[in-house]
Length: 151
Image (cartoon, rainbow, N blue to C red):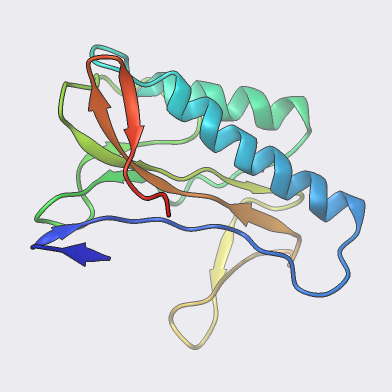
């Protein structure tokens, strides 16, 4: 989405038809992971803490963490710095006041390797297992993080 020349980014996973408990749990854990990650954000917090938080939660539930995609900065340029990995990492860098970026955990029940369909848009896991993603654009404030992409 764009407003007055500035970009934002958001996504959510929705159910279609009858869904079993395994799928419901994956989606719930992924959504909870997003909000846990947001809750640890603030000025001076290392970006790698985001990856640690999501990966710890995924491990607890025996889910995979997709590593091929990243959280990213937003503003007048879409998919800009900072690049923030949502898996465990040792990449240096920390959040600064008034910075905007996305947080978008992607969890899977099986393979973490993505495969693109011929439509050049749709991505699925290599083994066609279930996956879920949630994403918000946030603003780093003096008191933590403010979600910019709520309805």
